[in-house]
Length: 236
Image (cartoon, rainbow, N blue to C red; front, side, top):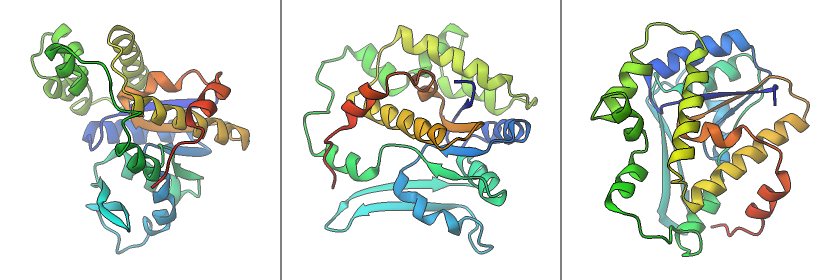
């Protein structure tokens, strides 16, 4: 959908944040969707308070089971933090779009959505670090160093970098089908969040998420399939 603009970033990536801000200035979005638990939306009004200086974090936990907790840290150089500040300072509708943490807590206690197939040691390594395959092709033995050279230390801030990231992630995901059951649910919820924003009438929806997810968010046609996948999920 031409109304949707995907920005694949690395969490806490300095270069990602710099390129993202330049892309947002160019796009001038009228809605911002950011990878993160929707429960955090209730806290976003704190972002603009003068005393709220990063590093800060959102902590989400189950009151009756505090060991079930999730921690969402933000530094000044985090692309997500920069996106939050950009949107909120301009009065742009800004919200988190990931699968609610209440559902993820409950799924962690269920066997139904856990990986079932045994993976070879090589596939296990690639599941833990799928960018390693792209790094190897480029002549690197370390995916962090490859990504740093390609994105984080990039001097230019043109938005073409995000088109390149999307293309690379699409090729990687087509070659290495490593998506786990919970990841499929997360991406289905992200697509539903994008559809909801479009249904509200927004025309320039900026989507900020980990680079790995971007290919899964390009095709919004199967709304019924996503709704069926997400129906009846447990919550904690």
